[in-house]
Amino acid sequence: MTTHEPSISPNDNLKGFLLAMLSSAFIGSSFIIKKLGLRRAGASGSRASSGGYGYLLEPLWWIGMITMIVGEFSNFVAYIYAPAILVTPLGAISIIVSAVLAHFFLKEKLQKMGVLGCILCVVGSTMIVLHAPGERTPSSVDEIWELATQPTFLLYTASVIAIVLFLVLYCEPRYGQTNILIYIGICSIIGSLTVMSIKAIGIAIKLTMEGWSQVAHFQTWVFVMVAISCIIIQLNYLNKVKISFWSLYFGFHSNLALDTFDTAVVSPIHYAMFTSFTIFASVIMFKDWSGQSASSIASELCGFVTILSGTVVLHDTRSPDPASVSEMYMSVSPQVSWYFPANGDTWKRKSEEILLPDFDAILKQDHFT
Image 1 (cartoon, rainbow, N blue to C red):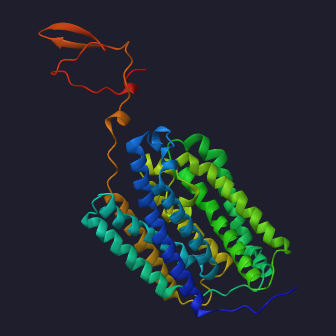
Image 2: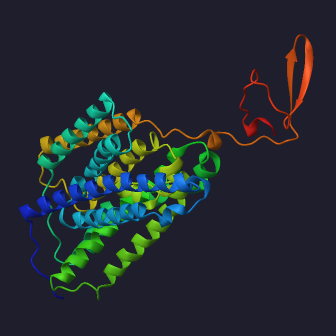
């Protein structure tokens, strides 16, 4: 078996940090560019929320897609060089980028509390970067396999499977439609295993490109199958909360979500759960905290909590897009009759008759069942 000596390079964390920041910049920008494309397409045709696909002909939307893909790739490579405890929390920086750009290009005013949220995210990210542990690069995919099959991580994996089965088989049929934590919980817990698998695949690719091929190792393909299986599960449940797969990791949303879904509650909850489980899984599998002092670990946790606080503040202060009246209210059936008391008499009016100016009303369709 061909291997090379493992190493801990002080530059690896820097590479991972720069790639994670670049990823956040591209992803935050893609959110705004795609939003502008959707607005432009909606102005000349049906919106994505109405089932329209006019945005596919909008060059600006495609520019946003390309920007998004570049950001995704940068984030994937960042996991190769730096530990998940450094890369994953930095995804919150994309929220700052999108909030600032939205202020200037989408005219979504960034409130004073929003500025405070941005500052909190920056402070928290700085704390994590300064205290992030160095990561020892495995010498082969066999070594990664040993880390993945150690008793503590196998116990974590078994716990993940048990919890997900409980959520899917018991909680989802009863509370899935009323409690968004069910779907987000499934995606976040499974997502931690997805990141571990993707990180293993990335390291195998890196070693192969350096001349130590890992293609012939069956463990490489096991990690690939695990990643694919987890992604399929996540896609199924992410569709139920109208969030795209990539928003799970990189902070951007599907066209339908961009056009209609209010992420003020979903995003902070998902960020907290996914980041927590991913850090926990990485600490167990790659032993990120091994050799670190208690103060460094505490500083990293405080940094994460600070970023989470900033994320919550940012989302709470961002205003949703105003919906048009035609989208808020549906047309009323012509068979509906309205009754208005006038001078003690009851006046019956058919819906096809012209309503006098004194009777301005908008009726929701779901009032009539």
